[in-house]
Image 1 (tube, one colour):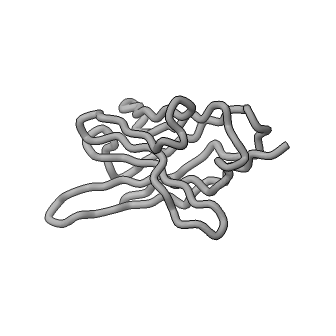
Image 2: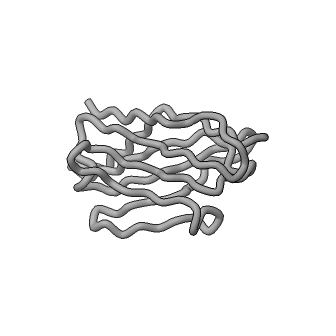
Length: 118
């Protein structure tokens, strides 16, 4: 059974930093595409950052230069380092794993709340 568990969210002042972690079980993160999404109240879920199975990383323009994502293969986790946070970064952040076996499998974590406010 595949499980993704996000952690590290919280309340932070504008300009502050947070580090999110996505711990995976039942799946090996180094072999598959992983991504971070976020969803603000009343808005659609949007892609924030992604890592391909080959290690290619992409960021949404809104977070380029501020957010960094990485894989820790030894811990089987994916991290999202968020710096220079802005109020518009406030959202629930989700981790997603994509696995191709005999069919396409997409797995989501339960999300972690990030609130940027003074």
